[in-house]
Image 1 (cartoon, protein in one colour):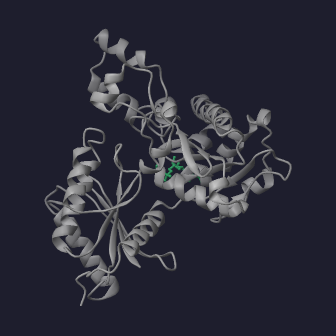
Image 2: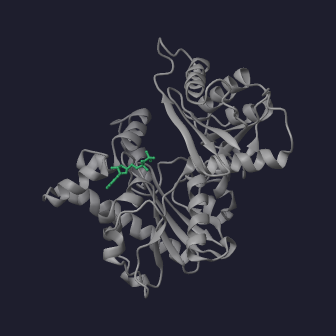
Image 3: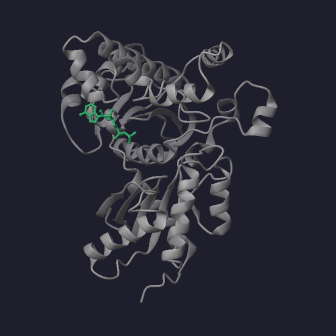
Length: 385
Ligand code: ADP
């Protein structure tokens, strides 16, 4: 099936066209500065996408479905859904939980409804895979009304990636996915770690928002919440300032001045103390979560590294694994430095937990899930001639 995958943001629209029968990526692009003079709105952005498709495919691009990345599915969505007006409204109503993302997704969905009204659209939620968390993992120990009135709970993100990587890892190890217990370290500019038991997510480090958990490019990850309340009580910072501080100016950037892991590693190798400290804090945080999730899943079969840092940085993988001797992790240092785009094992044969590098591909996962749902929904008129 030929699927248009859309990641619609407030000022940008990323897109890919994929053929799901072969897994082929046929085309990809990005429209930026939506809201500016040249691209006033998402409808205009989609006109540019259409032009690109026509230039590439000649005339009718023969799309059969559209799959949308949707950041927040709240408590309602535990799987991809076919989009209609009511679903679009539901995505919009989750805006309080994802104010930057969900309204922008709805704009992209509506623009497509107007341009290609008969094309089936599917929403794939970043939170959905984590709907299997047990309540003791998603509930915070705060007064009940924060949950019942305000939806304050752990939701978790990077779910589409975690689900995709789980399937690839189980394949690689030749275990049925429902018997697979592992730990997924998704280490990109945004970073999270997920505990997988029987192929399902049972805990994850991001929380109510993507700020919690690991040290990220510009996000702090876990801090004592009193840091915020105290700074506000003392009148040193406003809530908005702290929000920016923790989301945009912290993490690697806060300690080492840059959010680019390549630069941090290069500077640390030259003896830069701030860069070295940033690496130490970030890798130690990952180790702590691995220890915790090894217990949570009852003994992991595999530890999987994915995303920009996890896939590409042998140095960071080595640093993390060096601290995991107590749980029997033995990295194969030669295998770990080899470059490859394929899923692979980078631990020694006698390692108690297999260490894997598995490239993630959220767009491929969205295309596949879209095709699956549209096929299951039965024949439809796509409006093609
Ligand atoms: P996003 O969360 O934006 O999708 P990515 O998964 O693309 O992020 O990861 C971006 C991060 O990956 C950056 O910190 C970048 O420096 C890091 N990265 C990419 N390639 C390498 C590499 N070869 N070595 C170390 N870090 C890398």
